[in-house]
Image (cartoon, rainbow, N blue to C red; front, side, top):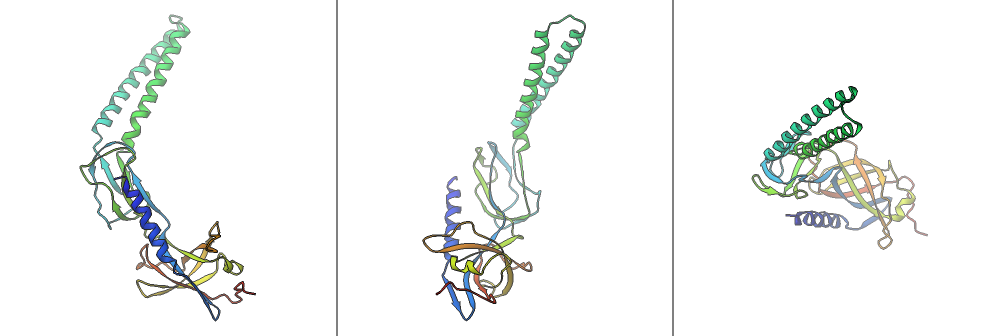
Length: 254
């Protein structure tokens, strides 16, 4: 099941490589390929070991922020927390009793110290027992859709096992790989048009940031942009041809 992480990485690498189909410059129009991707795409993993009691969504389903994406059978963890709370209550009563007797001079400082240490230990055990209980529910960190499931209901998983891959399908950006020579005129706020392959629509947008590193071998750099207006037809993974029309373009040619 852990192989799903490698599979996701290979899929992402393949999608990115398909988006790099070369560049074109003609009559002041500079063209490059773009890949539409989500601003938030994550693999959710289990933080506890246990049996999955609820997995309400399937691949492609939409969910809202805060929705339950997975729930575990946590009766054992809840029982351990109940035991820890009872021990904490007893330790608190013992500490308070020793403190009271200390004011009367009937116990020494060692007894007080041991009572305080017992109380602190019980408090720590409550915190440790509460940790897995708090992770019995996995809630959506943002609204979006299920890309793929790596586990199923009633399946027992271990801590660290991947459960699902999700993305935010409402906040998308474009990743465009351009020749590094274009940096002489291209930068944040540079406007562009994109012809989306899958929908046939032409949409406008602007660059938001530049990549941090130039590929020395390919002499290219990734740049990122967003559309001027949201488009509900777009899905992460779509691609298209981006056209820049700088007023005073410098191609870097002698």
